[in-house]
Image (cartoon, rainbow, N blue to C red):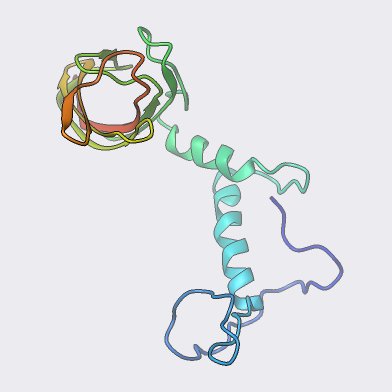
Length: 190
């Protein structure tokens, strides 16, 4: 991450211009109807400074050769509780990574499983009392739809995974090719 440094920059952020029109989204334009959007200095400066704020918050110096600084800063800030930023479920080589955020007595876990199936149990890195499984997004083989939810029991989540293709439905089995990004939130056990 770095600030603009190609010889065209100024040393102080200019005062943003007044809003012109209704705020919206960039477009490539449409000949004869709509001009293509211009990403002006105000938009660029806003994006740049939003990203630089992450580095500033952890005291990192911008490094033009490091494109992972914002992610590293986010992990540092979210893991300020002392937990590491990623891990693997102790019983599952199918986990591509777990990220958890602890705020006071609350904790939220986000993780990706590459092989989800019905009745799969995943160990969590700490105990919830109580814990709630919510929020999931599944990936399925072509022609299939799937859904996943789970039951949280202290330091485990047991998955419940369904699949459907046309008029055929059932539970997903290991190796069927279903994946999911999932979230658990709850009060940490004392």
